[in-house]
Amino acid sequence: MPPGWQEYVIQRGDTLFALARRWGISVDQLAEANCIENRANITSGLILYAPPGVNLRPQPTATDESGSVATGNYTAFDCGNPNATITDPRPGAILRGSFAVFGTATHPDFQFYRLQVSGGGTSDGDFVTLSVYNEPVFGGQLGTINTLAFTPGDYWIRLTVVDNTGNWLPQCTVRVRFAE
Image (tube, rainbow, N blue to C red; front, side, top):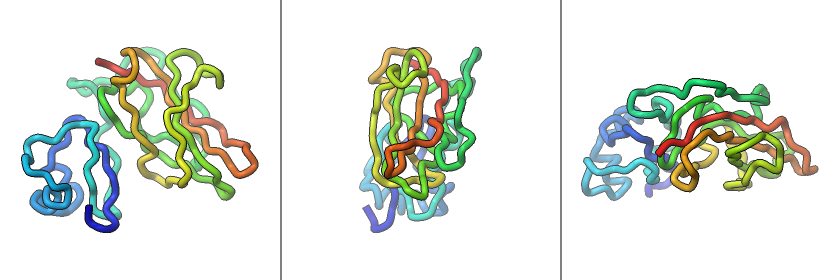
């Protein structure tokens, strides 16, 4: 990996050509930096390294083949604090395989943030912690989730930002669908 390059999780539908164009480099440069021999064979969920300072936000949100969003009561709550918010995936997104969660997790007295998932309710006891991160993120990739670890269905994704006193900001929670 070239110095300063950042991790990007390959999303469904990504191609080296499209990513190189979006990031303002050639396909050759992207392939070489990532030691990719077969340029037609990149797989969603794998890590690719992107040049410093580029937008890592997926284009568009990961959805099913038709580009649809699940219908029904898909919402988000407590996501109004700009220091603790999930910007992608959006409520109702239909997600398959590994996908990246984007947003912001920061605080003036930052200790850590965590990503959690619940297949049931929204009480603290309903959530399982997937990962804990010790570095703040501002408008970037918060982590990844692999839907293959879960039974297909509706899930809540929750972001919790904790300060050094052990208190947390409102926990941004987004309802999505994990599909096969």
